Length: 283
Length: 273
Ligand SMILES: Nc1ncnc2c1ncn2[C@@H]1O[C@H](COP(=O)(O)OP(=O)(O)O)[C@@H](O)[C@H]1O
Ligand SMILES: [Mg+2]
Image (cartoon, rainbow over all chains, first blue to last red; front, side):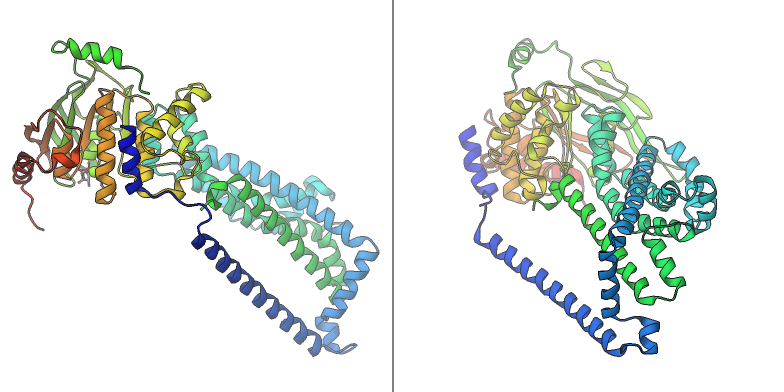
């Protein structure tokens, strides 16, 4: 019968030839499209910066009000030289990472485990919605009273900004699992825990990672808001101090660093996603 | 593979007195649809004998999927009883394989990983589970594709993996719900042939739900026709198509094949909507 099946399969499914010409060609055209996007993005950025620079001559009122790319670059250079760039970035980065990690860990664990019990999740739902609607900024004074003005209060702010989103996205992923798939697991004799571990958790990864990407920004905002309220270092503090001294290019310089930090963190999450979900990039 | 011929061969040899793997008696099932009770299965009895292949055909929406889900313990019947090997079972029956039109492969597992799922759940040693799964994938013509993710496989190949995932657990009884309905005609015939060979060789019993009358006739020893909802058995036919039932393509050429098909078609009483 083996021989029969083999000839049968020759009709049913021609073996995929690895590295067939069409696949290399497709990879090329995808690369070209990516380059075109990047070039256009750079062009927009350059035009924008050139216009900004041109519209704000040195020592003009406009330069004072809006700063200018060259002035911003000057402050960036100064921040690198006096070491504040690295110090502020690493402090804010640390707060953000800790808040991101703790918030997502706690939120995801709760969100996924709510899958276990419809009853519990229905009891919890209005509370989650209520907590999710609290503007985190409003909590900042309380957080500082509770946790002091050090690292912990910023991590707490960052965690609070993340945890509800992580909870909701992971719960959504868990309850969105195809019921037929769950039935199949049951007919294979799986226990509830096996269904959870072998089906629900991996199936929720897509939603969990969507949540992770979203919460990078929230974690950063939480940390910076915490620093605004009370701090002696970090990017939020640098922005706040420069702002209160009307040194607008320095505000922008610190913002540029903040954006760069957000981009790096988002990139890292994407890398981890690729690492943990290889099947999605295997086509 | 499928190393259990001895037991089955002997029970088959001494057949007659053996308990059928599946007996359904006067089963009824209804749904509660927004507070309104909708009867789906009115009164249904059937027997699946050992090594027998039974096809169930019936108008769409008559409750075939409901029947199958009830048989494998995913739904609870309102009345009647279901006996597996003579015993009533609560929850999932043992040694029953279940397969749907949707392949339901886990996208994060390779073909091999998907095939091993049931063995893994039952706690079989990984090495043995892998050996058995690889061997079965080979037999189903998927040699060299064991380490592919489902997203890189064709529809026909994915359904082959789903079949491997079902068969690797060596179920006594297979419950298949329109398993080939989504496939193109050629893939379907080839997969039917391969499935038939494996089922017959392992002396497994098969309950096959299909809306494809030709598929039902070419594969089954018996075809049960269900009525419209609320569902009952409308008719049952023994399909006598000679002793060699291994080649579904050749079977379709026989004159008595189209005779069976026409009779069942008439029974189904299909009206254009
Ligand atoms: N969970 C459910 N709740 C209410 N009605 C259902 C449910 N599942 C199926 N039905 C209804 O029961 C009938 C039979 O469905 P099904 O068993 O899927 O039919 P078939 O598989 O024969 O096409 C259909 O009319 C369908 O609308
Ligand atoms: Mg159906």
